[in-house]
Image (cartoon, rainbow, N blue to C red):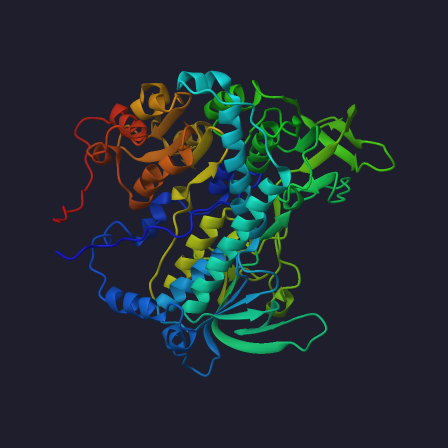
Length: 567
């Protein structure tokens, strides 16, 4: 039998915000019962009739842009393009590649650099810094090294070399994304894009005439920028956002991180590994408010308490003044509820990690009667834009951070692919509950679906029971071999029918392990079926194997299982 290739997702890098991922899940109007689970369950093993010819075109086109133009489709109906995408981040890139695969003539407009926030100022360079912090932690942990029988001299680092590693990685990935689009014949149009009317877009550079083009369909994929609260003065040197921090121009002795979500947690991991003292300022009453409470409690015990980190919860940073004239950074704290003054901090630097805001200004939305909501472009479950009258705007879509459904880079890519399916005649609704998220601390945290409080709230409203299963990394052979037994996996499920409601992991390579659970949710696989999956031994994947096997689904419950595929 011919080999079968199944693509379940696109780029899996993640852009995090301080918002709760699960809150974003719940804010969506989509219910799991109304979804086609990405259209994968019945179609997963259906032969792809046209895949071989498209793969042949792709292989022939590598490095041959002149030949590849034909692979970018032939437009019909008097339009310049079948699809124009405004924004060349991870979401726009994923949509463009899928559009070419579907035979659409495609253009992408980018006013800055290809790759957007994720590649240039987000998840890609941050992973380079976190790779350094992980190795520094291991080398600095004398007890850990002795357990392996290793003796290591004092570990040190070159700040500029670390910064160069992050910058070089971003450049490499940016070039990869650019070349992948060029090689497939996607037209990359440089300039700031905006909508000037139905199926019409203009783009151009400052001081130069604009160019107007037409398209059957338009996707807005302009992403987001760091959110800076009122009263905070950012100078880019001593009061910084994640954009500045990723350059690692300095490693301050004492830095305050405002916000303890994904961004703040990851940077605390980097800074403390490089020798900084960190103070968190969190507006809510607990650290890591977006995580499942049980996971957050364990993560605090491992990631916060033993390190040079202290924190203030239930307070706002009402005013932050950069260092100047020999004076330190001044941070005025007020009670989050009463707004009464609480404290004043004098530190070397402050990182503002309070989430991200949509980048949707200057898009010409007024030309099509579209009004943003808190800056986000309103869309339906198929990412089609909704105007001020509540009417769907024909042929106009918005994906990624700009629509606010789920502010993750891989979610943007999945939304873009879903839109392309729509415009090529295949009804498709993305199941946002099945999209995983991860925090790349040491150890890592990952999750998909609902937290336990959210699941219990949903169960109370809908009248079903919730059960919990847990497994420990301390029982996993591979984790113990790595001397990394700290961690747990948690499964939230329905015992009456085996539906997976959520999975949360804290431990070694948690970000890689979560995908078995997220793919099971996307495919609609129930616990009673996934229990029969086989995992290599000894591997970390057995943490999930034991987790699903430990779940207790009521006897007699079964769900359809796909026919086996012979190989």
